[in-house]
Length: 69
Image 1: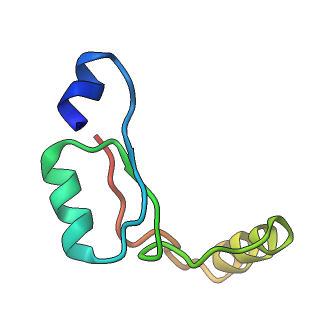
Image 2: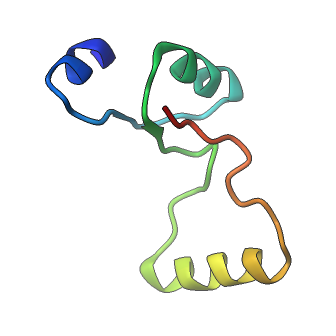
């Protein structure tokens, strides 16, 4: 699916990534982006601002596993 999407000039986002192993496999397969519990549990729009500000203020890496092409 990743290859088909790329051949159609689409960016690919994997959903439901829960483990480091899944993340690394997607990266090896050329997936562009990923989302899921590995990165964060679902939070509300109000909570996201607080979450990001708190992590930036404390200089924490909020995305320890980043899938980029």
